[in-house]
Amino acid sequence: MGKSKSDLNSVELANKIIEQYQPETIKDLQMHSKTYLVYV
Image (tube, rainbow, N blue to C red; front, side, top):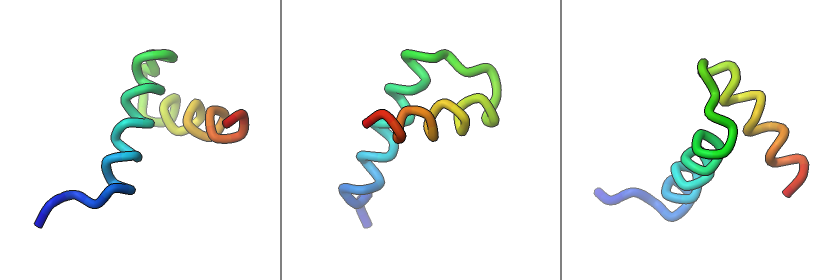
């Protein structure tokens, strides 16, 4: 079974956050993803 479109969008978003903010921990990634979603 292939990945759904929403799964691919989530991966794409995570990759953009990692690329831009370079979080060191999962907690940093979660914090930046919440911040990113507020401004989008």
